[in-house]
Length: 277
Image 1 (tube, rainbow, N blue to C red):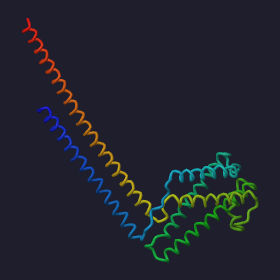
Image 2 (image 1 turned 90 degrees about the vertical axis):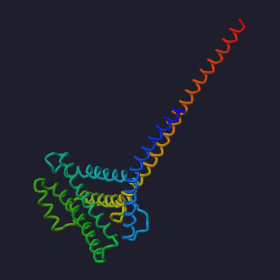
Image 3 (image 1 turned 180 degrees about the vertical axis):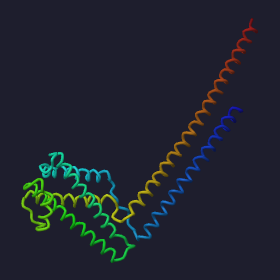
Image 4 (image 1 turned 45 degrees about the vertical axis):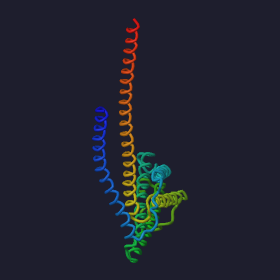
């Protein structure tokens, strides 16, 4: 009996300790969850959003496409610039990579401006301003790629003065190139630019800030869900240990009883044998 009391008291104290400890941690996570949920609902209410957040469900796939575009454009453009560099193909790859990075940077700016137009908290004039800026960015990108095309033409005339003559020819006839391959270079660069805009636009929800506040809420929600599962697992393990210890004690009592019964039988047999003699 005393052994059973000891087992019960030991496990009860450990159980109460674990409950208090996990309750404190659970309250902290629950508070974080409530705040994140409040922030999300407040954001949706302020910006009049009734739809679900639409960020990409496979962001790694989108980033893989971006890296693929960067690699493909760099490799394709490098052959056009290799003869204009003292380092040959390596120099061409460096020049092509710089142009690709400019493409990526401008595509990010374009996507940012397009998303800003969706804000319900800005005026019609501001929306018009973002539309105009988006158009300016696209027009500047087209001009930039034609300037690159002029540079490619100038490389075929004089490598040393290619930069200088490309600017002069662009100012005189911005959209007229000498070589058909230069047109291919321009079209290819602008096509990659459009693909970058599409991929970057799909990466996050089109409404600015909606993807970030939803992502924060989902992370804390998953954290709370994981903690609850872990807490249940700890409680189950605790009870299993308690029952195992209880059953071990019962088995120990059974062994004592078996030994006691065996001794009683043995004494009785010995007594009968003595009386028979």
